[in-house]
Length: 85
Ligand SMILES: CC(C)(COP(=O)(O)OP(=O)(O)OC[C@H]1O[C@@H](n2cnc3c(N)ncnc32)[C@H](O)[C@@H]1OP(=O)(O)O)[C@@H](O)C(=O)NCCC(=O)NCCS
Image (cartoon, rainbow, N blue to C red; front, side):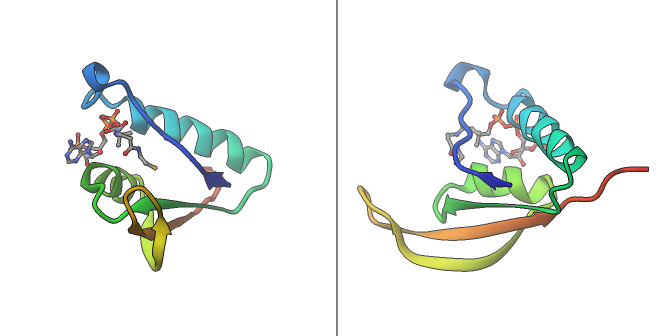
């Protein structure tokens, strides 16, 4: 599973919406046999990096100049997926 974009409207942030949404997607994905999830995130996006760390993702790689406007490196984060018993 490749997570491309996650965004929560400013006035709704900090209420657990992104956590709920991503967890719901991960649960559906594992049911169809997918074994891992990954994403790229701007290194400066502290809230997003913290969100994914909290959801069990690890930073496994840096991609130099991955983003443009403004130019910035990406952290690649991954998590294995297992069906809960
Ligand atoms: C990143 C984003 C999606 C988080 O959405 P959210 O619904 O506010 O996130 P949650 O309420 O589920 O927060 C879960 C965890 O994320 C981290 N987090 C979220 N906002 C944070 C902030 N402003 N500062 C630090 N950590 C933050 C915390 O670890 C938080 O857990 P905690 O509440 O126990 O501390 C939201 O801030 C956003 O839309 N940002 C702009 C777009 C973006 O950066 N998207 C991600 C790129 S892939």
